[in-house]
Image (cartoon, rainbow, N blue to C red; front, side, top):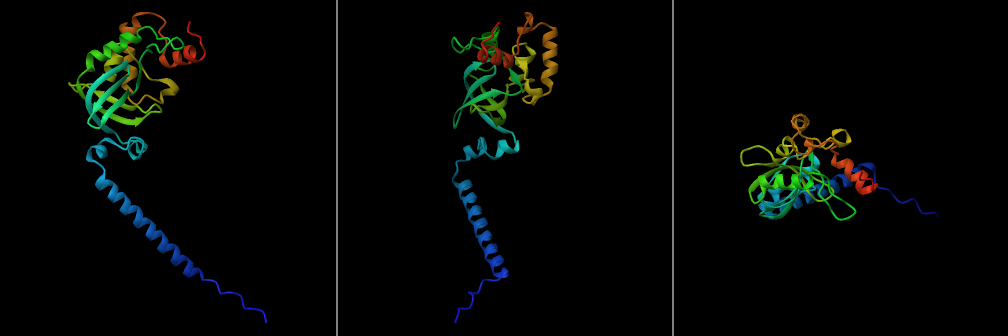
Length: 213
C-alpha cells in the first residue's frame, strides 16, 4: 500500500506563525533601541549620529566648541567636548589654497583663509549643521558671537563665492547670491581684480585637467 500524503499546515497556521515571528522581531528591535539610547553618552546623542538618522532626515543639529584651526576660507576645525570636528561652511566656496605642486592655489586663497581666521580663530562658537560630506566634514553655518554667520561674512566681504555649482545643489542659503552681487559691485576682496575663477571650476580645470591658465 502506498503511504498517504503527509499533511500540510493550513494557511491559517502559517499566517499565525508569521505574525508571531514579526511581533518577536519588532520587540527585539524596540528593546535594542531602548538600551542603546540609555547607555549612549548624552553628549553623543545631542551631537548626532553624524551619518545616520539626523542627516538623512535633514534635521539640523548643533556642534559647540573652540575653533582650533582654520584650514582655508571655508573649512575650520571645532574642538568639541567629544573631540575635534571638521566644519565645512555651508553654501559658500572659498578660493583654493595650494596643496602641493599638482594643486596650486588661487589668487586670494590665503587672504580668504586669513579673513576667516580673523573672525573665528580661538573663539568658542556654535555651528548649526545639516549633513556630513564625503570628506567626513560637517556642513554647517558657523555662528559668530553677534548672531551673524561667518559664511555670509565671507561672501559679503568678497572672500568666498556663493556655492552655485550644479545649479545650486549646494546653495542652502539663497541670500548668498544677493550678498555676492553686492560684494562684486563694490569690488570687495577677490572682486577687486578681473578674471576671478570659481573654485569648483579651478579644481576641475587646473587640478584635474592641468589647465591652470
